Length: 145
Image (cartoon, rainbow, N blue to C red; front, side, top):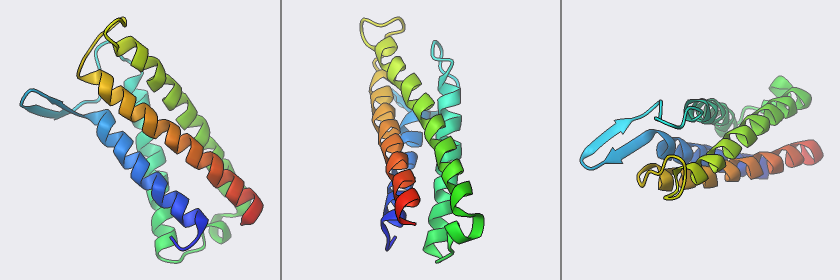
């Protein structure tokens, strides 16, 4: 957390948790439930899986930074950059799908839903924030680490 790399990673953990929470916990009337599969939104399960695995990766890096373990020294700069690029590519796919779902869930969309639509907007915002954070993290790692 004392470095720019650690601060960006901390933001990724927060953004990832927020995206997972908005993506998976549904509150409809008085029912609260965890949803894996959405009717009419089949790719949502893939989005949830991408968010989960990239969040787990960010948490692992966060704990390594928290306990002063040198991540770059342990796995190497090039391998770390490759892992960041893989996460970035997955998150771009996730954010693009989620952006598409915003139009599908709107009141004039193919599957209008007043419960899912605000969640899709929130998940999209956090997804794109994660994309930007990974781009910045790749640049910081490439040029300054």
